[in-house]
Length: 274
Image 1 (tube, rainbow, N blue to C red):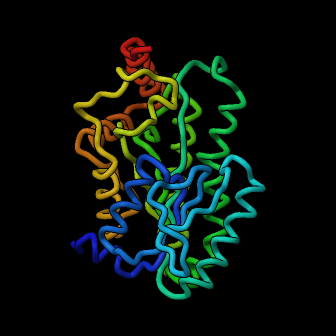
Image 2: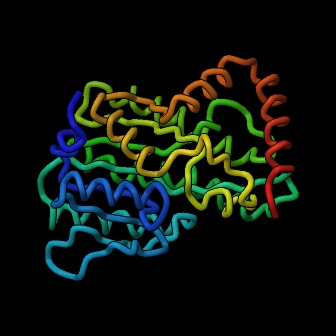
């Protein structure tokens, strides 16, 4: 098993979405620690706090982009490609589709426009960015890392759209990896469970919704993702408890899995502090 530094050694640049917070922020922090000259291109609305001062050789480059808008993505990704061709002409490229958000509540009580925006960010933007970046990756070699979730393995009442969007990410990534087999590019689906980020607050749940005892840190998730990349895996579920949870959820008949998930989510809803 290669060290994490050895895993990143062939890569000259990382293109990621959502690097201003949470798991994305940890990808930047750990990546720069392991390989200080690794170039990052971040696509998000908010600029990462760690952005370096302007110079010809920027380590962290921010490309402002509203991922919920197809036109914005279509305009921004070619700018990233041109930047890489100009400033980082050699080496492999790692694409990390990390941006995503959830919402908790019964459908259609939740704001419908917010649900559609979730599909745009979690699904459409991921596919669009990958499609626009893939020709460059095929020339240079590299990898595509898509952040799914443990909820991708079973239906999830009260967070139905989010769970379904992550199921798409998981299955689409696995299928894409098979299509890329034998080429210089591969794909990896990362499926974290409860993670210590602002996800629950953004989804509309109170502080009591996150079970601290089983929650992983963002650094733990990123470390697991890099290790899976080094092992040439197509899928990784960080953490033993998450592995057990997804194994059980994937083995149950889907209608029964949905019934069990409903009971769990209802209990989570009651335990959530306003």
